Length: 155
Image 1 (cartoon, rainbow, N blue to C red):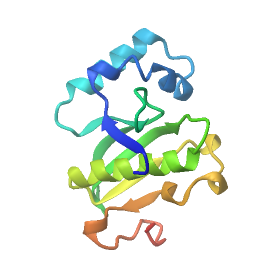
Image 2 (image 1 turned 45 degrees about the vertical axis):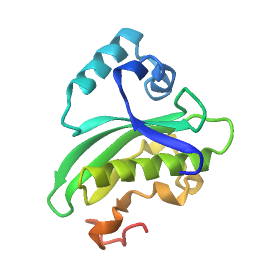
Image 3 (image 1 turned 180 degrees about the horizontal axis):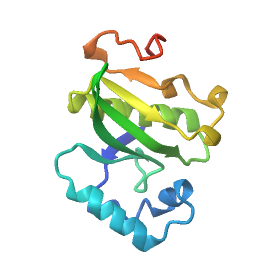
Image 4 (image 1 turned 120 degrees about the vertical axis):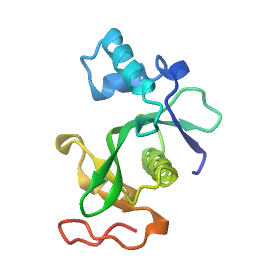
């Protein structure tokens, strides 16, 4: 992933990502974040979690997104990623591409047919997003899928 690594949040990293969490939810208190993280970490099924993006050689994460598994009537087992963000002073598109690829890998490990990204409408200009940020990202081994609106899936 071009000098990046994606891993799932562990209890040892809860405090490290609080600054990133505050970028997504500015008013969240440390105590509220810790309570929320504890709930997420209690789920040992792998059906929900928080993916962290870290530059190779760096200790602290520079990006993250929450994820959970769903079953979509048309698409089957789906990993939904939300609250995705990258905070870096350079290589933002490269970092976001790495986060997307890492989430796709998490989805494949969980036998999901597709990744659905939920991005806040006001937070991004679609023209500024890298190609990897398209809404429908099918997992390579599954074959072609058609989103409900009939548009061709991203490749």
